[in-house]
Image (cartoon, rainbow, N blue to C red; front, side, top):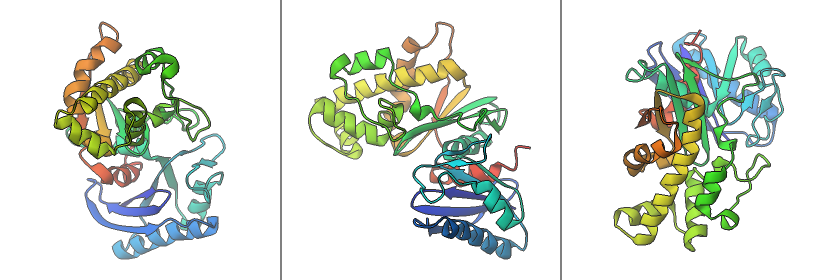
Length: 304
């Protein structure tokens, strides 16, 4: 049995899968906010209940909004303050009496999609989440590429380049601070939050992403113009990522991935920002949606 846990700032979800990654069971609880020991107990109890249900000791994989430094074993997950800076894998392994693995939740999302039957034909899968933030994960031949420290895939902390600043108006470009301590990170531009902030600052009034998209489809000129700028910003930024990784397929997840016009417009805008001999990879919507995190976390034990 393979347990995937999606460990977030407000909730923890455990899902149990068989070897074919078919979901058999799930349970969700609030994330403890005040004490690290309570956080450990919450995860331990979730796993214990799953073990009892299936009369087995399942493999435990975690998807977290950050990473565990592979050199030090310390978790860097700033929006789960009770566990940030703690040796979470060591402590959970001792409590559960088994190996526990963890990966960035965007990496887990990418792994889940790479293991989708339709995508297994592609040697390199890039998963990009356009949700509350912007992040990604790279899967090469069915395995997550984590990098030296576990930071690979933190694409949201790449920063706006020359062409992006030119597009947004040079010194008039809105520059947003990022939670990582830097400014102008893609996390604050290519996310649903960034979509709304950019519209507010470029068009002069606040609207939700849903309202902007509805206005776009209705042909409202301000929304149409803004979406054109946003698509170009995506092409500039994702074009750099494609140049770096040359993936065979890109899978979009997160709330903005449901904006279907992206799949029509982005492939047309990308060639201007790629090398002449480059091919625009297949770009598609995630199949597993919100279940991708737990599914990918469970799959961490299928990649040996």
